Length: 291
Ligand SMILES: [Zn+2]
Image (cartoon, rainbow, N blue to C red; front, top):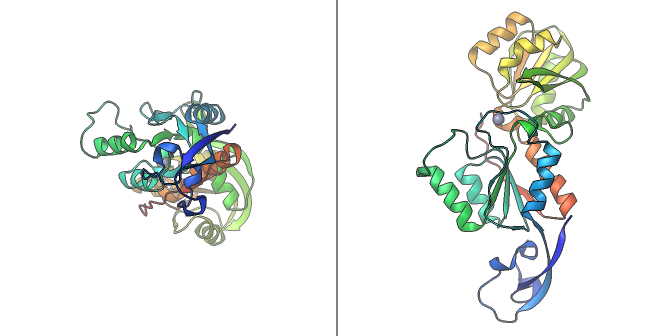
C-alpha cells in the first residue's frame, strides 16, 4: 500500500503548482526561501511493479517474444505520479515528463524489435526517461486479456454488454471475449461509434447480431475464429484487406474501430486501479494515430 513520507518543498503550499504535493523532493524548486515540511505521498516502484506483475499475470500470459511485459525502464525508486499511454512514443514520454510523472504505464512498450542499438529515437526516448526519472512499465497481451481491467473487457463494458465467454486462440490462450446482444449491424455500428469512435464496417453477417466477439488492436485475422465460435460479428481495431474478404465469406460482420482507440481502455483502467490502491494521481496521455 501507499507509504506516507515527509518531503521538503519550498514556499507556501498554496503557491505550489498543481500536483507538486505528490512529487518527490528531488523535483522541488531549487530556490529555497521559506522551506517547509509538507506531507507527500509516494509508493515504491518495486511495490507497484510487484502488484502489476501479479494482477496482470505477466509471467503466465503468453506474448510475442520481444514484448517484454513488466518493468522496462527503472529510472526512479519512488513514484508520486503516474502517466498512462497506449504507446511509449517520444511524444508520450515527453508529455509524461512535462506532467512530472515518475512512472509511465503503456500497452505497447519500447522493445518490440529485440536486440538493437540504442541510437536515434530509441536513444532519445530512453535517455529522456533516465534523465527525468521516468520509469516505464509495459503490459501487452496481459492487459488485452485481463478479465476486469483489460482492453477487451473495457470494450465489452463500453458497449453495455456482459462478457460470457472467450474465443480467438493465440498460442495456448483465448484472447477475445464474447457477449450476447440483439442488434442489427447498423445498431452495433452506432453503439461502437458512440463508445469508441469512428468505425468501419466490413465483411457480411446475418441481419440480427446475437453474438459478438471483441479483440482489441490488430485482430482482423480472428474473423475465421469468430465464425468457428458461432459469432455474428467481430469488433476489433484493424485488419488487413484479406480479413474483410475472409469475414464476408465466413458470414461475419467485421467492425474496425482503430487499433489505437480500442486499446485505450486497459491503460486507463490500470491508472484508475493504481490511483485507488496507492492513492497516487494519474493522467492519461492521448496520442491518437487515427489508425
Ligand atoms: Zn496493440
